[in-house]
Length: 263
Image 1 (cartoon, rainbow, N blue to C red):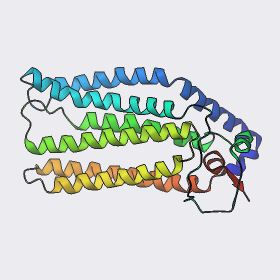
Image 2: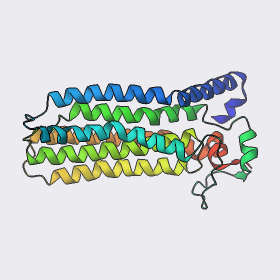
Image 3: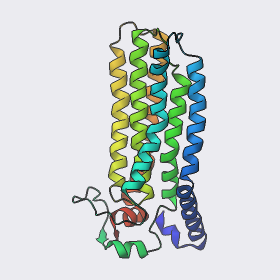
């Protein structure tokens, strides 16, 4: 795919994709504000129509805290990542090389950054944006499918809610951090994203196994949960099938994140 970058139209599209990524980075503060407003509104609706009545102020606080974490976690993660990896900073390569496919020649960081293919442009921009979009997609999937607990939720629902909440906050944070690593050209990005995919798959399996042992889980809820977890697994596996070969073989990825060019 990267060989096509030598064509004028591909060079033009590559330049436009790099410009889009730059605009995305500059516009992150506004995106964060929009995120807070939108998710706060959606969470407020969920709290207003909780599964069971919210009877006391303590119940209200207990119900609101998870949504506060849902809102804040991606923002804190992105902010931490941007501070940890400033733009233009040189981050050393990992000591061990996991991607052994192809024949490559190692170059230094300065030379790598001087080459035209360096950066999160081209198809890499699509992956970058896809990783970021994954965060609001998972969040609104959670908000749409999981009512607020209220004050008198049954035990099976509390367990289901907690597991889905942990899955959302933990994985949203991981995907948000992967986005920052890709944006700032941190060498560990490809293996970090691969690790997040593995964790995502394991989380869906753990939720399914844990809820399978809940005796009083209603049948329709169990069936809906199974369909949702199966859908989550399929989405992760499709992402792996689409992007893992690119992360291993792309000239742009190998130049930007591994500082190597074809031998």
